[in-house]
Amino acid sequence: GWPSPGKQNTGKIHGSALGQEELAGLKKALGFDPTKTFEVSPEVIEYTRSLSDRSRSAISQWQSSFDSWSAANPAARALFDRLQKGETPTELVGALPTFDSGSEVSTRAASGKVLNAIAAVMPELWGGSADLAESNNTTIAGAKSFVPAIHSTHEWKGAIYGRVMHFGIREHAMGSILNGIALHGKTRSYGGTFLIFSDYMRPAVRLAALMKVPSIFVWTHDSVALGEDGPTHQPIEQLATLRAIPGLDIVRPADANEVSFAWKKILERRLGPAGIALTRQNVPVFNRESPDETGVVYAAASSTEKGAYVLAEASNKSPEMILIATGSEVQLAITARLELEKAGIPTRVVSAPCLEWFEEQTEVYRESVLPSSVKARVSVEAGLSLGWGKYVADGRSVSIEHFGASADYKTLFTKFGMTTEAVVQAAMGVVKGKK
Image (cartoon, rainbow, N blue to C red; front, side):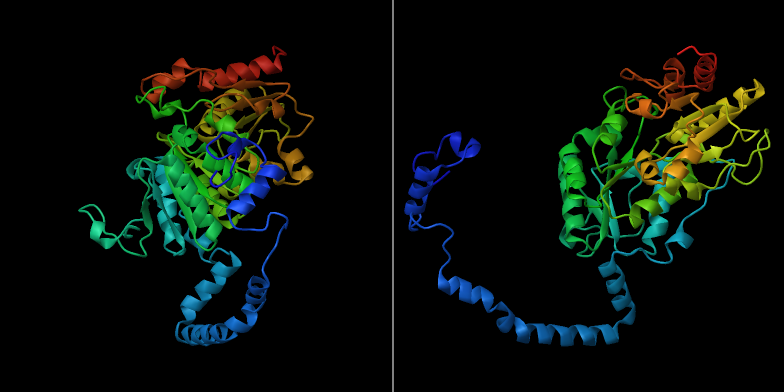
């Protein structure tokens, strides 16, 4: 608090206003007239107001240089103009990879492939990880690192325009750096770590939402299914508490093709930050082209951009039960639907990769996905049920309400009731009125 005469070196300099007497003493210590307020000397005002005249020549020289550069570098000028407008390239959609149905791939691995495909058409895209790049799949292949060349290693080469950032084991710093890059405004950056470590960067995430800057957080290992690392690394409450931050989009794709469109949507939006939650374990790539055993064709992955959509309609197109799921648990809803249909219960599956995007849709669209007349609903997510009551008020949630354990993911899902059988049982209970 120097040189406040009475409050320096006390806690009061931080937690209370100076007050008139103390303010006068501070002004006097700094050589100002304590009787005057907001005084600006005429010399300062004159200098400030002459900025336009003083800079006219420099602006003219800069414009001439910029025009010459533009004429000599039309492609670079076109990139500059696109970045100034905050637009994504027209080639973005064509660059998105598609993944074959029938295969299984973790959404973190799919994300890595999507990032690299997008990086080829978005030179302004760059990012890295908090020392977990190989696990987060956040490295742009073949790109140099954003470090001085003198610090290159046998693993990577540094360059002033490198696109790979090495944040170190500093999640909070990583989030803050991403916010700073976003505030600068022209490039798009991302940073990765495990979802559990979002706790370490939460202040930066919250500030990104508060400032409405489009920072991108890549959070992998998004449930207890990460396995043997155990409960210290297994997120339980993270999805729910991150969704509680106003203005933060939480995106949890169900399969590899949802990942593609999730990244497209994230990069096109500039309304605020987004966190994409991705699996460690492999999940099936849904067949969206041919009908399943109930004669239903699953919806296109492009519907991911709506936030929630009807992935699989009831066989009679008049559902009596709606299963709402996110991420890796959508596969459980899909298999549970088949069992419920066999039991004579027409069932709709809604994939809900981003509830924030869904809430932005028109009331008509939201009603078409979750009709108010169908109150028999079950949510399925490998985490707390906190927040799902809004969508399944008269139904149930298949969730995990306790910490995890160290075991392989299949054992954990079985022991913790994250199974097709558990979803079917919950749905049957709702239908029979057993709340």
